[in-house]
Amino acid sequence: MAPVSQTVRVKVLFFGRLKDVVGQSEESLDLTEASTIEQLFALYSERIPQLAKYRSSVFASRNQEFAAWDAVLHPGDEVAFLPPVSGG
Amino acid sequence: MTTVLYDDIFQLVREPIDPHSLIDHVRAPEDGAIVTFDGFVRNQSHNRPTLYLEYEAYESMALTKMRGIAAELHEKYRIHRVAIVHRLGRLEIGETSVFIAVSAPHRADAFGACRFAIDTLKRTVPIWKKEHFEDGAVWADGELPPAPVATPRAKPAS
Image 1 (cartoon, each protein chain N blue to C red):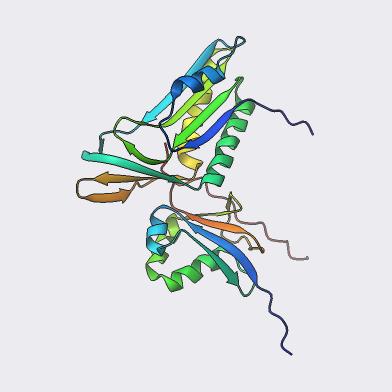
Image 2 (image 1 turned 90 degrees about the vertical axis):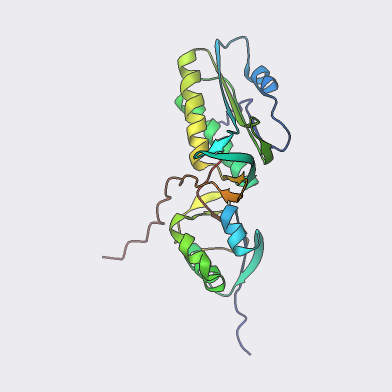
């Protein structure tokens, strides 16, 4: 019998212009292996090629804190991709 | 560990902001100064007439960040209370989008803290503005928050 693969379920959020590009604001995703935030963004960029050009201006958060792109995701994490902020 | 509880206000609202209630909230007999910042919708952007603005936020994180700003204010300045309120949704020209009030025993701390609060909010709180013009709408360019440092790697055994 094949070993049961470990999946990591994360919630992914998009805001501002990224929400428009992706076409949705949130999604639950099952990652088949341990992934970093960078790999998660790359996964979306494969699905939506025009997303890639925003990579240099996008910030990421994990569980409501700004996070480094090499942060590894854990089950239940909430990841958000944030364009430059423009409140005020 | 001691947790200091301040009677501060952090809100994201969809109705018009009432500055007077916020000023009243931070005002106390032991204070001698209140400094406020009233940010409101300008009628143009880069010389293009603006019709209206739409604000959206990553609400849970925005509130956490606003709380963090207030905590930083209490560390850096001798202040009493802080109120930070940002409005979301559609805002017309002249309507207040953000209001900050800081009370302190003396004016220098109140001025410094209020300035620090709005500058930090504009750089770090996840809120976005869409500008609507006669010929379409665009997301405002925005500011980049300070880059988080990459996760430290375990040192290879030497």
